[in-house]
Length: 190
Image (cartoon, rainbow, N blue to C red; front, top):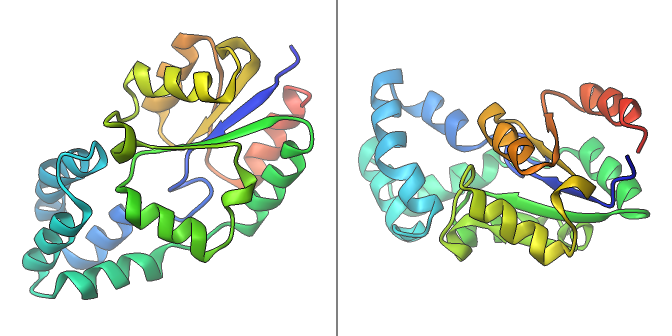
């Protein structure tokens, strides 16, 4: 199969995972799970502003929202090996980013690390009021890329997100490491 496009997740694939790492460093597992269940999805979908999210996070750990946001940004590290893989793929394929995230936060990381040019489309959940694994965010990303599902490879570190992409007809890759991704890309003969 000749694939025309790739859709990449951001946190846990292109960038280090931030939310879970910060929670693990700052809260007990049960408190972290409660916080995540209360605030992550509503923030990702845009129902809770990024500002209010960091106010809540700061309140939970007795620090200011500004301090907590800075801690999150400091945890955000771009995987340079992933950037190189995407640069190579971009020579012959359309590339999209599809991420569950509050918009200002992810946009700041993308700008800070000067990687916006890697992507033909950037779809951020809080900007479109949809979150993965909602079928609509996948369909929107495909539409913006101008490709159909069967022409597309979807790369995400969440098995649940990949399963839904495959149900739509995309080739799914569950990301665990750059080395594993390179092997998977050779297997599908990109």
